[in-house]
Length: 114
Image (cartoon, rainbow, N blue to C red; front, top):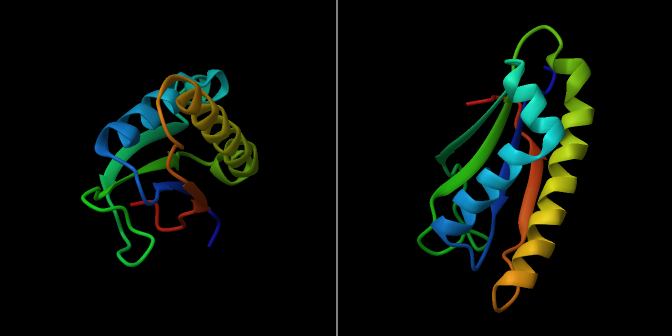
């Protein structure tokens, strides 16, 4: 199965406001915003799919970027790199404007695209 979604999961130390801030940041990333405006990409919050030692206390949300349409497989690698770049920029910005280290963020393909 080709990848049609990307899962962005914040780990230990993340708050719900971190999840929402990162989602808003990704929505404003120029190339991702262009794909959203063209109907090729949706950015959603959803309940987290994993529990365990890496799960943040009290945060059950993650961000899912879903690629839509026939072009989705061709766009996947481009969008995946854009998401990773956007996450790095968000972490740098958060480090500059808030005290302490930002939460770690995992970016991975999510083939079920829920």
